[in-house]
Length: 168
Ligand SMILES: Cc1cc2nc3c(=O)[nH]c(=O)nc-3n(C[C@H](O)[C@H](O)[C@H](O)COP(=O)(O)O)c2cc1C
Image 1 (cartoon, rainbow, N blue to C red):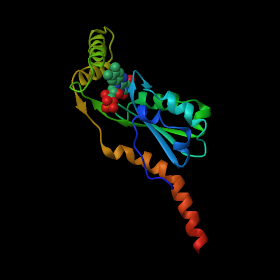
Image 2: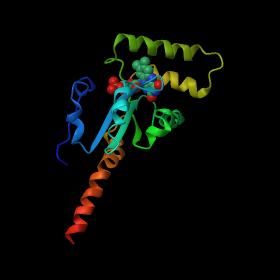
Image 3: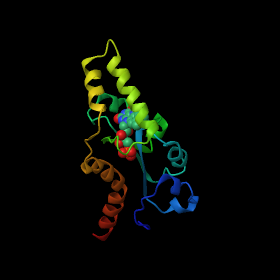
């Protein structure tokens, strides 16, 4: 690897020239889930077309627990079949923090929770979801990034293994 790892906000990454990304072996975009979509993933997806020689991944944090079936649907639909050939998408359960949420998001969540509460034919699952989402919770854990780290590192591991092989 010619460059060390870098952590950039999207707005800073958008200012970088094409050359800046050239020497990285692996690039990962992280965003949050809003109404089932990975927020601001478009920039990465457009760039990724020219980064097919790299290890590429996207991850999404959200309020849903990892084992929520909606997460599987999200993972299937987040990118196209073509994009799946060179990008792997991950999901990491996170939570809701109403104290840190901006007013429009807080209002949207309030409306969503009250719509679910008032829904006449709401299932037990929907009722439980509404109660859970009515207040802040944190189900995040740093361990959920491990599969992403392993995936991004694989290309390096291969390169390392080959180097080792040559020495023998
Ligand atoms: C308006 C709104 C919509 C959301 N929609 C979803 C969703 O569809 N699925 C989900 O798992 N989490 C959803 N969330 C939860 C956020 O993805 C979650 O709180 C996330 O941790 C926020 O990212 P941050 O911690 O980087 O701010 C939503 C949150 C808000 C405010």
